[in-house]
Image (cartoon, rainbow, N blue to C red; front, side, top):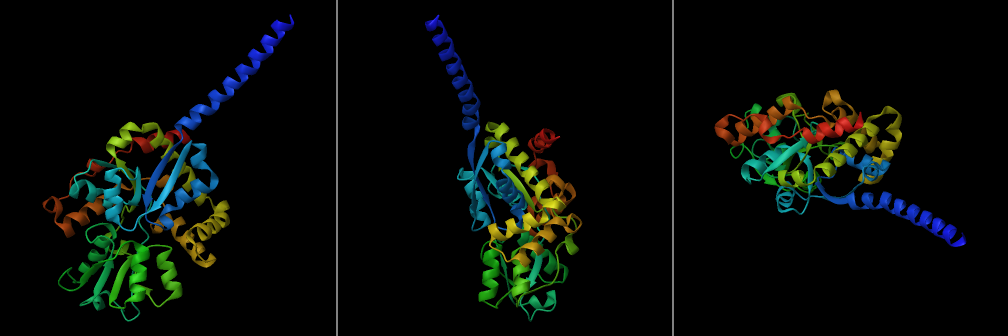
Length: 336
C-alpha cells in the first residue's frame, strides 16, 4: 500500500508538473520577437501604450522597436527581412510596391500625419519659399508630396521655384532647419512641430489637410509572404496595437498617457500634453478609432502620387491593390 500510495502521489506530482509545463511551453513557443521599424514620434502612441500596459505580453508577442533614419532604410530593410513590420506613412508602402516591386500589403490605418508646414521666421506666406530650399525625408514619398502640393497650389513648382534637400525623418528635418536658415520649410508632425513652435524661431503656415482634404498617413504594412507564414502572430500583434490605442484615447487615462509620452519621447510636460491633444482630436486628423483605415484618405495618397510623380500615367489604380484588411478584421473580432 505504501508503495502504491507513493506511486500515486508521485504520479500526481508528475501530472501537475507536466500540466504546468504544458501551459507554459506553448506560450513561450508562440512568443516571437518582432522587429518593428518606424519613425519616432506621436504616431507610435499605440505601440508605446501596448508596451506600457502589457498588451503585447498579454497577446504573447514580444517586440523590438527600431527607429529608422529615413524611409529608404525602412522600405529596403523590410523587403530584406531585417524587420518584420513597418509603421509609417502608407505612401511609403505604395512606393515600395510600385518602385521596388516588392510584394507588400497594408494592414491597418492610424492617423492623418498631423503635419504642419514649418518655416523660418522670415517666411510669412508660402510664396516666400520661392528661390529657397525645402527639407524632406525621401524626395518622392508621403510628406514630401504633401509639401509639394501645398507649394504647387500657390504656384511654386518643384525644381523650378525651389530646391529639395533630402535630410531624413522629422527629427532630422527640424535639426536641419535649426542649423541652416537656407532650409526655408519642411513638413513636421508632433512632437517635433510643437517643440519647434514652443522653442522658436520656426513657425507654422498651417496643415496640408487644408489643401488636400482627408489623408491616410500612418499605417502598418508587411511583406505578403511573411504575413502568410505568420497569420496568427500578426493578428495578435494588431490586436495589441488596437488595445493600446483604446487605452491611450480613453479620457480617464489622459494624465498617465501624457506622462508616458514625456518619459518615452523625452518631452517636457507641456509638449507632451499638446502632442496628446493633437493625437486625441480625431476630427482634426488625429488617431482614427481603433486605428481604422481611411479609404477616402488613401485615395488622396494615390491621387497625389499620380499627380506629382506621374505614376500610372496620372490615373491612380484601385486602392484595393495595396490592401489586405483581413488581419485587422480578425483582430477587431477577437476584441469583441
